Amino acid sequence: MTIRGLVLAPAVDNGKLRVGVIKTRWNPTVVDAIVEGIVATLAKQNVVDVVVEEVGGAFELPLAASLMAKSGQFDVIIPVGCLIKGSTMHFEYISGAAVDGLMRVSLDTGIPVINGILNVLTEDQALERAGLKGDHGNEGIGWALTAIQQVKVSRKYAST
Image (cartoon, rainbow, N blue to C red; front, side):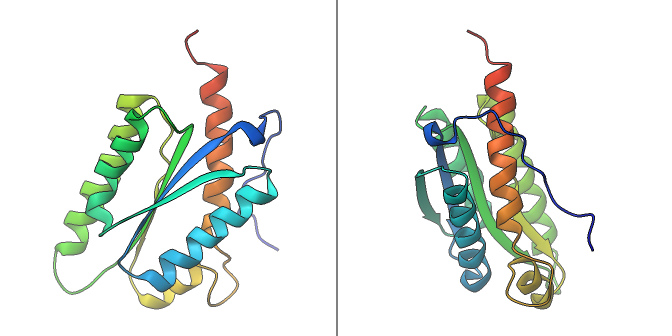
C-alpha cells in the first residue's frame, strides 16, 4: 500500500482542454516513457488535444514553455526532462535555472506550467520514476492529473 498519488477532482470538461507537452532530447529512454504516461493518462481523462514538442535539454524548457504559453493556444503546459547528477556542478546550475524558469513562465503568463523535470541522483532512480524499473510507477501519470487539476483552479479564478 502507498500513500502517494493524486486523486483527480471532477468538474472540468476535459474534452475541451488543450495541453502542450515539451520533451527534452536528453535521456530519451526516461523522458519518452514519461511522455507516454502523460499522453495515455490524458487520453483516459478524455483529453485528446495534446501537442508534443521537443527541445534539446532541460535548460531550453522554460523558453519553449514561455512561447507556448504566450501563444494563447494552450490551457496548460507540461515540460518533461530528466537531469541525473554527475560529478560536476552542471546538475545544480541547470536544475535550478530550469525549475525557476518554469515557475516564472507560469506566474508571468497565468498559464499553468507543471514541473515535469526529474532531478535524480542515479540512472536507477530515473528509470524507477519513469515506471521502467521497480514499483514506483510513471511520474507522468501524476503530472497529467496535476495539469487537469491546475486548469480547473485557473478557470475557477480567471478574470472575466
